[in-house]
Structures are given as structure tokens and as C-alpha cells.
Amino acid sequence: HVRSRRQRQMCIRDSHQLHRGQQEMFRGQLVDCHEVPQRLDHVIHELAKRPVGEMLKPPSHLDLDAALLRVHTSDYLSFLSTAWTEWVQLNPDNANRDALPSVWPLPGRHAFRMDKPPLNFAAKLGQYAFDAGTPLMSGTWAAAREGAACAVAAAQALMDGERATVALTRPPGHHAGAAYMGGYCFLNNAAIAAEHLKAQGIERIAILDIDYHHGNGTQAIFDERRDVYTVSIHGDPLTEYPFFLGHADERGSKEGEGYNLNLPLPRGTGFEDWYANLNLALQVVSDYAPQALIVPLGLDTYEGDPISGFKLKSENYVTVGLALASLGLPTLLTLEGGYAVAEFGVNTVNVLEGFQSCR
Image 1 (cartoon, rainbow, N blue to C red):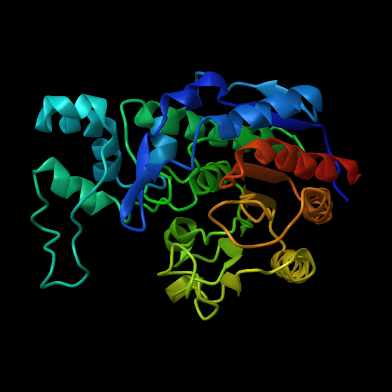
Image 2 (image 1 turned 90 degrees about the vertical axis):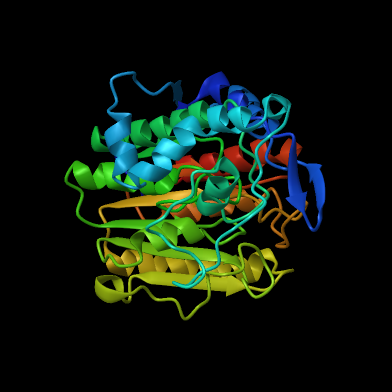
């Protein structure tokens, strides 16, 4: 069981509200965004009713730029930091609408030249985005940076002796790769936390992603490494977003071969089958014997989620928290998906209460 000190939350407070998308492209039409500020607001409200730890803001002295560069490319970070200005310069009327890509490079040497990156903003947006469902607006960069700062602060708290920390991150992060955004994600908070732990001397880390949607960005970032074992339980990519990664035969490559595990499940999977796969994942993590565990905590596995397809109930998340805690590892959780907005706070705190009750 988990030992050490109390559980903490690193909260971005109101900064996350700077990222407030108006619309996303979904199946050929613009619809209201599913990833909204109220998601995190519900978590904070529920934590006020059922506190499970101390609520903190990330300290100002963090070397956040260095932390981001351990995961993301400098050109991608530069793009994110200037994207809104370029969008408005493209057309002053754009100040009233979000930026969504409309053109993408195809893979392959004869379809896209990496040595001649485009100068046109619309083309650059397509170069760095893999979907049209991730709107970028004036406050996106500031909110994403604050979310990443929470992840770094939560990682440092583990290094300082906390038994568990929670980065209350929004926007989410696990779909973001080293040089691309998508799936509502811009900076990969779980990967940033892992690299901070590595920089502080932690040698072996496991990342266990339980979001309904495969953490394609996280897998890609660590694909060739054996010092970070990535495990994911998610909807089968043959039918479920993000579609193009997350199959069971993806086991890592080069030095990382054998250090990635995907457990794709069919739409409609209920808690019993899902929990059996969680226990398999926990055994794999235990066998790896990491010094720390990072959990991209997606709760779009909930039965009422509007864009997902598993059947977990709110009470099941207490059991999930207990199971995660049973490894007895220093554990960091980052908030990821969960779009049944009103229930997201209850489900999140249920996980944290379950984790805390395992002593």
C-alpha cells in the first residue's frame, strides 16, 4: 500500500479559463466544443466539498521553458507562442473566431518537404495539428503553459516526498506529440512531468493512461525508450479516435521495443472487463518495477460521456483509485478527458478518495 505523506493537488485556478473554444469540427459540421472550462470548475467545486489534499498553485520559480523543451521541439513551441498573433494578422476579423486548420500535409517524401516549412499561417497550423477539433484562441498558450507548470510542480512535489500529487490540468495533454497538437491537447503534461522526474534522477517511470482515447502523443514521445514504460487502456482505434495509433501490436521500437503496451477494447465495454484489463496493466507496471507512476487520468470511460463508449459508473472510480494506489508507488495524476461535464468533478474526486483510502 501507499506510504509517505499526504496527497496534494496542484491547481491552475482561473488560468485554465483563458482557453475557451467556441467550436470544433465534428463529422463535417461545426459544433460546440466538448472540452470546456466548466470541466475543471466542477472538479474544483467537488474538491471544496470533499477535500482530499492541499490545493496549491505552481511556484513562480519553475524553469518551465526548460521543462517544455525536454518534450516538445523548439519550432513547435515557438509556433504555439505566436499562433494567435499570426492568426489575427492573417485577417483582423479572426480576432472574433478560433483558429482551426483546413489543410494538412500528407505523409511521405513526395507529399511534404520538411526542409521547406511554409510561411503561411493556415499551412503552419495544419503542419502542427492532426485534427480540426482542437480550436486555438487568444488564451490557449497561457492556459497550456499553466497546465504544464502544474505538471512540473506536481512532479517536483513527488521528488520532495509527497506520496501522490494531482496536476489539475486543462487543456488536457496526452494527445500532444513532440511537434503537434490535437485531441484538445497542446502540451503533453504527463510527458513533461515524466521528463522532470528524469531530470531529477528518477531512472524508471511507468505511464498508465486510462483515458477512453489512446494517448497517441505520449506513446510517440517515448516510443524508442525503455526508461519510460507506456501502458494504455482505451477504445479500439479501428473504430475510436484518434484512430491511427493504439493497436495491440505496437510494442515500442528500437531501444524501446517491448516497453509499450496497448490494451484496446471494443465500444460498449463494461466495468468488469475494463477492470480486468486494468489489473493486467497494473501487473505489467509492477513487473517493470518503476520508481514512479504517472497516470493520465481520463474519465471519459464514464457511461454518460457524450463522445466515448465505455460503461463505467461513478462508483466504479473509487475502485479505480484503490487499484492505482495498490502499487505503492509515488504517483502523479494529470487530468485528461471526461466530457460528461457535470459528473466529471464527482468522478475525479471518487478516484482521489479511493486512492487516498488505500493505506
